[in-house]
Length: 110
Image 1 (spheres, rainbow, N blue to C red):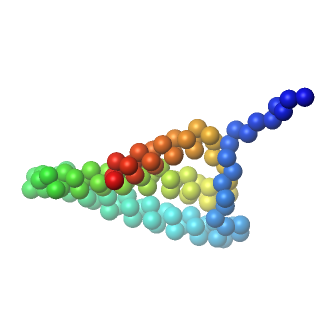
Image 2: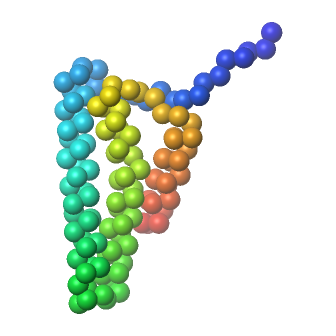
C-alpha cells in the first residue's frame, strides 16, 4: 500500500508560547521594521530629491538603502503576522520565495 499523505506547508518554530510574549515580539518586530523603513526611506528620499547628492557615493548609498529595504521586507512581515495571529505555518511556495528574495538581496548587497 503506497503512502498517500502529503504536506503542503512548513511548520515554523514559535518565538513564544504565551499570548503576551507573542504580542511583545510583534511590537518589537514592528518597531524594528518601522525604524528600518523610516531610516532607509529618508536616505532614499534625500538622495533622490537633493541634486547635490547625485555623486557616485550617494548613488551606491541609495542602492544599499533599497537593498536593505528589500532584505528586511522579505522576512519580517511574515514573522510579525505569525506573532500577531498565532500561526506557525508557511507554504512551500512562500518559503521558496522568501528564501530566494532574501538570498538575492543579501548577495546583491555583498
